[in-house]
Image (cartoon, rainbow, N blue to C red; front, side, top):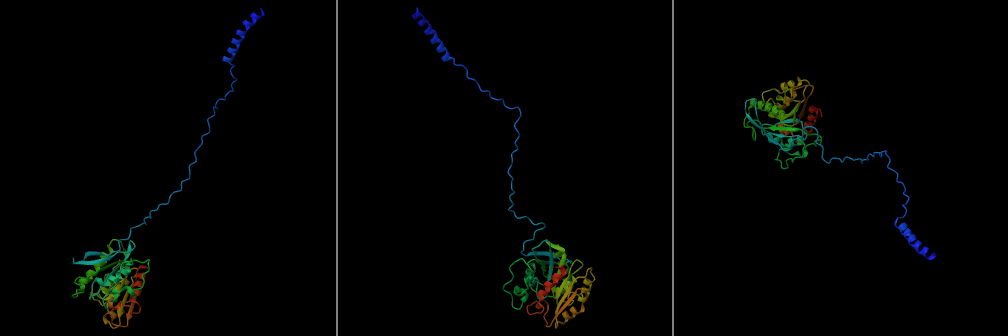
Length: 307
């Protein structure tokens, strides 16, 4: 009997063990917390500070730009319709004070070529080979022009005077001088309210005779009423302007007509320089003269323009 109970019990126990092995007890789960209902804080990104890169472009200066330095031919007319030709030397500034240069009877506007470029002061080549006896074309002895000064310059040739005047046409030349002053005022790049005139011989009278209310001064080398206007009367007209305009006169002591003309004039801003010789017109422009005529021209320009 005991043997039989043992045989019955073993299969049951084995089945229980197999069932236990096939269905192990469920493991105890660790609870996972639920996400918080509060939203996460908003993080504002920090952007890097950008340093502006400086521009490499050169800023454009305010105001009109200077014209090219090369001389320009200008065609214009006198009051009677006579066609004339001149040369414009633009300054390094814009608008610029302008100097009108008037030649003497033995020459034409080319006599002023070296002086025009000296006044322009823009580094253009100056004459190297100069004719014998014409020191006004030799810039080697001219005083240094301050680097900050640059003048617009206008030269012209009186009618009938290409290569030298063939005959005297006094009244017509006065028309030419006045037309040149008006033309200079209208040139591009000049200040029409800042104009002076400089001339020699017939141009010396043209300079003062054509220096009207819009002209700031006249510099004359050897005037002599060559355009039928007495020099002292022309200076008196400039003195009557408000304010009075400077008029400067140079002459040789033995150049009687010009010396008399210089001595005849007066005024609060008038100045005469009489040299001991007989030099006339452009012949006064030479290094041996004392005081230096080119230094006087520069001094005159400073006075007239208030530089």
